Image (cartoon, rainbow, N blue to C red; front, side):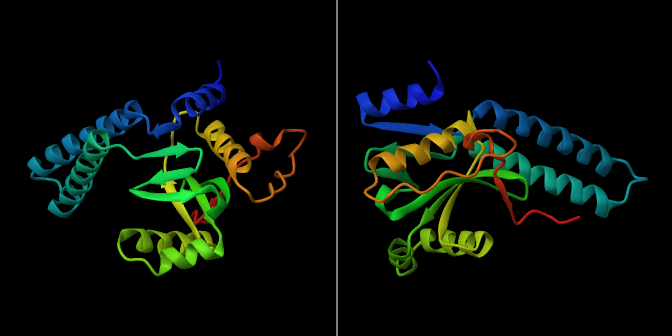
Length: 199
């Protein structure tokens, strides 16, 4: 059974699908951060090393350790239902979404929920962190939207499934699929980079 079939089955039988990030990937990132922290401590104890440089390495690695520990304990997740997507305590009905896309922001893979104008206006007039997040995402992407940081297991297949599920349950007409590239199907098209560094 493919991942797409499994998600469809869980949605049909259970009414919802919980999607969360890979803890193993986070454990790997944590191990790298811990290694840098050890290097930072060694540099700090070495009298020949600049205190400024060793403090920077130690501080940067320490923040990384804390962030990855927090993400392991409370990983990013969202819930897919027949009515839409729930993320951070807020529901995003399928009819409020123009599409679901994969984007790369500074090489970080994310799921982008593209909002229509009425949904964006409602969120802009709301209070709390959701409005702040939408404003930040809109400034980066250039259109109203909410980004969910990933990557998630089977990330590209997940994004394709989310868009197909949106088209299935939304009353909006389906948008055209991206044009194939070099004979590839739409799911193989490279996601667009947003806010990436230009060399």
